[in-house]
Image 1: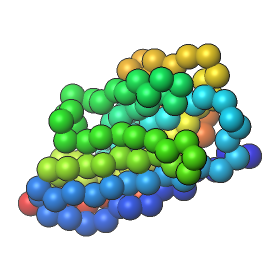
Image 2 (image 1 turned 45 degrees about the horizontal axis):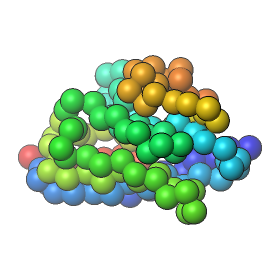
Image 3 (image 1 turned 60 degrees about the vertical axis):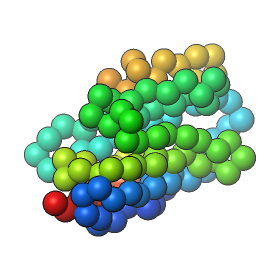
Image 4 (image 1 turned 120 degrees about the horizontal axis):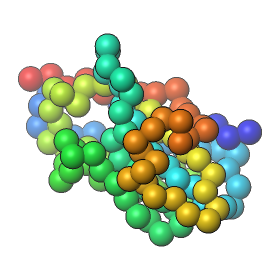
Length: 130
C-alpha cells in the first residue's frame, strides 16, 4: 500500500523560504509521476510542480516559476519542494501526489488534473504573511 507523508510546512513572512518533503512508502522500483498540489480555502486544488522519475522532466505552474524547485531522491523515496521568495498568495495546504508511470509521464499534462494521480498525502499547511 502506497503512503505519502508530507512535512515542512509552517508560517513565514513574505520573502521567506520553506522546503517541503514528502516521504513515500510502498512504492515499487518502477517509475512514477510525482507532483505537488495546493489548495487555498474556497479555491480548487491546483498543480504547482511535477516531476517524472524516469527522466527528471519537470513542470511548474507559471506563478511559481523561478521561485519553487521540485526534486526527488530515489534512494530516500522522498519528494521535495524548495520554495523561495514566498508570497501571501502561496498560502495554502500543500499536497504531494504520486502515480505509477513505468513507461512515460508528461508532468505538464499530468499536473492539469488531480485525477491523474492515484496516491495522495494528507497535506502540510503553508502560511505566508505580508
